Picture 1: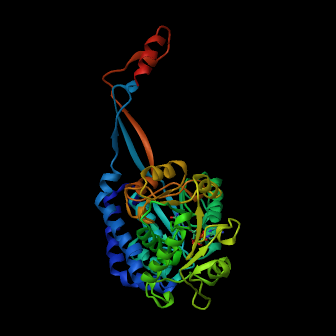
Picture 2: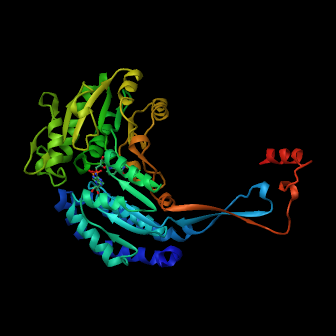
Picture 3: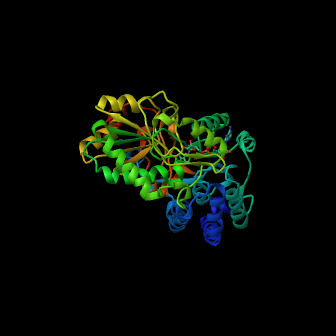
Length: 442
Ligand code: NAD
């Protein structure tokens, strides 16, 4: 049980984990490529280097984060010194998705270990190569009673959820998130649910259209659109539509060439099931760019769709693929009609040079997090909590916050004995006036 009480032991295991992830970096990158042709650049940017940075930050700060913190005492308790102790929850289950299968498995694991928990990790069955290398790294680093990997599909996940845990950290879809929440409710197990949503991307008439197009194309088509915080659909001010579409087309061609299928920088759809789901959303009459597909290769081109119908397949649920519907708006009321039709999204983006418009959007709509004049990059700041709200999730993590996610915070009052104010003790007669005054001060 060293991991529970001994912070040095936890730190040592994390240093060992750092050595392993550095040792196996090229195997991890290969596994990600084997799983769905994730380009090496994207694997390094969004997966391996992210995990290394998270590990280094945790190793450097674990002592500080784990230490009991003094907080200001209440006058009512005078004389006392008050503390906040962080206690590991105990047994933690982490269920990971396939789209960033390495990073989204290891980052919560690092924090759960740092906070002193026992961890069972269930990687996604849809990325078996990555799951295998994760299992190898964990087996070579940890005592299996401390941290272990359980590989398998939905049935394995269900079996795990049927057991009793002290904390469940789930990243995945909204429907499975609800299954996890139900299973957790049986034992009143606390959860973090990192889910998805339909993320709006608003571009107004003052926006720098060329730069907006470049940043949207990057955020949308990285990982072939299979990113929980990718822009799901565009809302462009109606007079800007044609100009903006020209910029989008140019930027896609600049990034992936005239035949994105041959680009080394463009990933594939995870499997045929998802390829079919996405292909069905493509209405050829509405395609204004791209639209090519290849089932054998699980390929779908970066695609722009001129959309006007909110009841179309592509506007029904989270797309989670390289299809980008473009809708127009003429007024704030139009924006409201479209955005509020959907559950609270995981992210929202607004491209504008108009500060008050940006602030109005941020104040008027509820969403997990987002950017003004960029996409996706809020994920990279460890000082910003990352998580959804409403249907896009419960809880948030990253940086020091992740340590707190996996810690129960115990409030402790350490009372001094040199003085014992008689005010609170019965008999109460004659004390009410003084206690009222005292209560006003705190
Ligand atoms: P998913 O919900 O299908 O699967 C996630 C995990 O749950 C997998 O490990 C899977 O084995 C398990 N699972 C699947 N069905 C289950 C069931 N019926 N019972 C118990 N466990 C089950 O999600 P996915 O397809 O892997 O990932 C895509 C989704 O995840 C998208 O909706 C995306 O927005 C979301 N996502 C969210 C974040 C975030 O940080 N908020 C990050 C990545 C992905």
